[in-house]
Image (tube, rainbow, N blue to C red):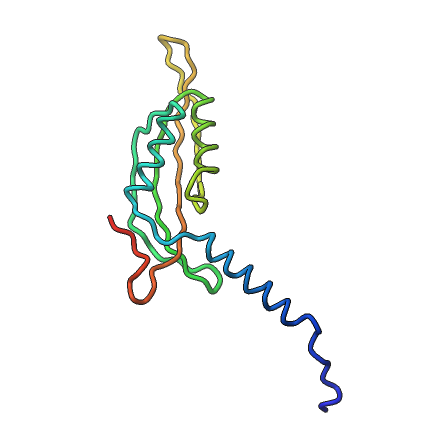
Length: 146
């Protein structure tokens, strides 16, 4: 029976080292749980820079969600924003490319709202956003301050 066991690959140590590097890089991609105030301020700053008016912002507390066999801390917020098409497009683009890299637009609904007096097309967008982070450790470290 021992003769039928195939020998280990010669590059097993290299493969293990590469897997460890990839694992550490993946862990580094997910930041520690962030301060919710900083996240909100960043979203509002991006809206202002894009010339978009943030009409309403609703947040939920951090939760822990499981995907596969991994747990992640998740912060969700809903925002309604209004402005012209270029401003909204710029705002959405900046949300997708700015920090944190783990911000995800889960849902977006855009409606056109024309001001009859000025004949200017404006738009309203409702966005559902989630920010993913590493969950707090058992000792409580990694939790954000409010």
